[in-house]
Length: 276
Image 1 (tube, rainbow, N blue to C red):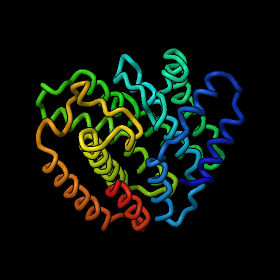
Image 2: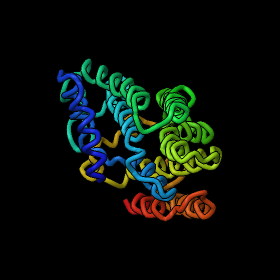
Image 3: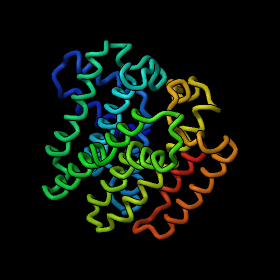
């Protein structure tokens, strides 16, 4: 965990009006692994840029990630009672407060970037566009729509790919694009593909862990089976999925051999993902 980044989040929240939404925001943000911000920092280090230049954009992305989890856990969505090792926000604060808190975190993400003193106007516009695109109807929201309108009887591998590509990979694409914008590289196709590859691995792992790990280990409800969701294990067994994940990591590391930045810091981080 990056203590400087955690202090950056804390400082931002300390500057907001103290009300029930702020209290709920603090609760929801506690305990996150900050994996997407850590991708931003690893790529920035590989560009020989200070991690701190990514703090505002990384906080905005973490706010969007947290909002998405709050709404995913709601009774109308996955109806999960456990998140980050503690009661889900709607259980701790009430459902209406959870909805409003998710809305506020999403809204705050754009304010954070727009008010940042670390980015020029053109970089702000590019970051905000990436946030709104890949967290919205052309990304995460579209993937969530496919997810909630599918079930385990819907044996469509193309639909599963689209769910992963949008619902999960959407925010990973943002995490890879943000340092590209900050570093003013013009390699959007490469960084978008990188985010896509990481997202597919992450989701395949989650599908695997849903059946081989406990809720205590994961710190959240493992509800895909209970909710009859469309997952990778509808198309293969556990052993085959594990083999596929290993192959996906191998392909990712080969892809990073041609990265337009020093990829060693990102590889170190991805090795932790592989071993989780």
